[in-house]
Length: 243
Image (cartoon, rainbow, N blue to C red):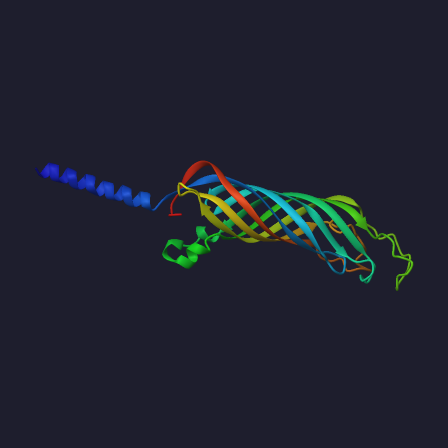
């Protein structure tokens, strides 16, 4: 009698433990891919940047639902300057391609979002960093000042190359909004992202002027502002918190 009671008590406690453990966990897909597009703005040796466009594709591996490593490819147009209004009459257009490996960390990995509706709603906030290469193709550039320039008409050529490959370091700040499928799994992601892209080299604007005559003491940078969509897929893995 006592043995049966102990056995029943043990089984009951075991089932409660398993049930609690299962409730505290969720399953998620280990991979995702996506695409998006938006605007960019350049900050280079040219006095004033302009807006261009960027399209991208991504493939990520989810170490957890909120920690990813992946690859990103970009294609777009970066431009800056104006032959009329620029102090040195410079302007450029760059039709570029780039690829990077990157990692991202979301807020959901760091906080107990199940205790706060506000934290739950912003658990997709993230920061990230990557490294890769950017292939520059200058399709329009002023190498010689026009004859009507106010200063040094006809000066040139401005040094630089029309085609180059530079090291590319993207820094990300963004937000993932998760949407569940009909089975309750996190399946779809709407992504909003701001990215600062540092290039180590002088290929982004096509100008490589001496710093003695022109301001040329900081990396060429372009920022992107994009919206995109991701789809989660692959095998399923368990996570320690409820999603």
